[in-house]
Image 1 (tube, rainbow, N blue to C red):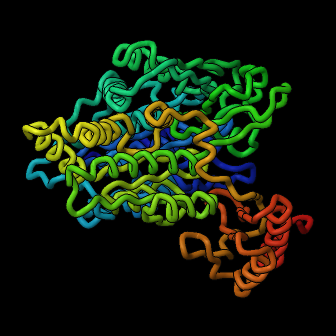
Image 2: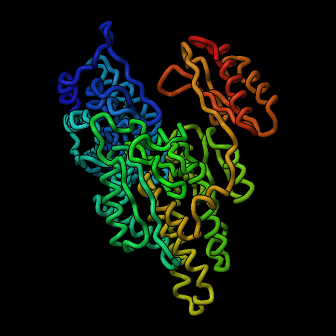
Image 3: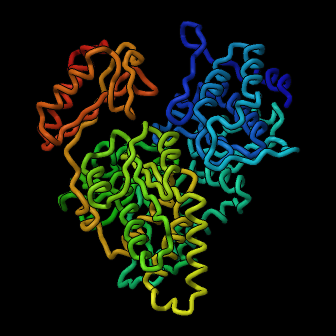
Length: 578
């Protein structure tokens, strides 16, 4: 690798300075760097080198997506995709942050030297580690961006950084974040990875999931595309589904597809709908009937939420079907299909199915998964980089954050057992005696193709939800009746220094400042059996995020207010006390 050429080229991308002349410091957040798009060129250039070095030490291609997801259009960011299609290892997040802030050539050389040591190649160990090659291929980086106006220049900076240090770059142009993850995943496994292959895989999985189920009408959804990159990709997906399954199965009415400048995520998109519990402010959603099934994706199409209007009166209040509800629906279908497979004794020992949640998951969803479905429930730290590896511990792991970001992970061994069971039944002379069980096996196999195995994906999520609803003969009412959410509140408390709070137990318990958790526990105890609350520091700003849940709306509001006051007192609140 040509480190000297890279550090020399970095002079064209100097670290920007703040008004007082000090260098701006960039922090690696939950999923990469994210801030104003006009100050990111140096960081994105250096991330090009991080991706290239990661590719070199693993012997497999990596990826970069220039996007700020659900943030306003003025912002931008960069997400780094590891060689298996997943998130960058946590250890390498530190390398990326160190390189982004390295003050000069010698500092950059030192960071790169650390990244290139053999011990750094497989930290942490992957569920699907790349094989060690005696003669590894040259480093290769896949590059993509969303529709933000700063995207082309930043993508060019990323390409320049990767190429300067010696990597080849495949620029995929406008692409959703999950598509880029899938391209790297497919490249890692030697699978076809062109965009047409991605759409064909999802469409084929959807077709096979719904095969054999009677349909009197086609499923119709209205999709809020957040004026982002997902709009064009959803149109292409709809065309692929039509070719694969026929045009009488699923209809998508795409709205907020290409708004005026500044419209990306502006009071539209999954983040707005999920947090505000209101219909998108644009796209005429307020005119729809409560019976209309609606979906909202975010700016880079890596999360989705379903919703419907509460009343037919022109108001924007909605009933929300968030990531918790999506996880419950998918896990329910997996459990249904495994029950139907039982007569075949296809899985001995039985598959271990788990639902992975964060602290923000509604308590009612946890109770449903554990008590009704009878599956294991695990809690992980916030962020896909923690949820996905936890899901890989199960034979089938389902995870969706409440914000709608998630997927279902079928282990390689599970897919092999599925394939073997299908072959065994097909060869059995009395296969017709177990036709329903065989159909269930095939539907499980189809689900593994309909859902993106690498990361949360709004496009594949829509297909899986629609397939499950169609197969079960459900609408939103039946889906909503699985369980009723407990009332909850999410609020922020501004503090002088968020680092004074440290947490454990999947971010549900504060270990510092001393006495704060005891005060929170005491407040929770006053609000009854269904109450819970926690406080965790933000990963990107000096605020503390407070979550509170109780049996009633008033109880949740009161508990949230009490915990905010506790955080303010113990953690150095700024401004008026809540």
